[in-house]
Length: 98
Image (cartoon, rainbow, N blue to C red; front, side, top):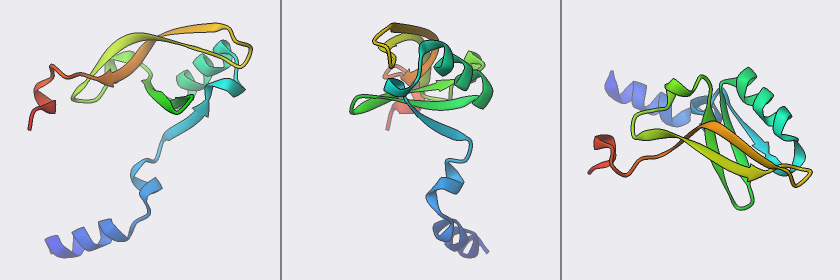
């Protein structure tokens, strides 16, 4: 039975596992629009240049191994956005030790 479940999991497309996470490009939206998108979608990945940052709303829902921080980036108009509910990798977390 375990092998059947594992086989079905492998056959499902990857977006099924990432359901609910919306990707947004910071250079296409204003700060207010990005904050509104995060509040509406609860889980958002904001692409900033080559990398990006993950945001969750409400802030208390960061996953294990993550910590909540304030982060900043530039929006479409070049304005500095400061958001206080970013979830980032926490190297001091017990979940991140092998």
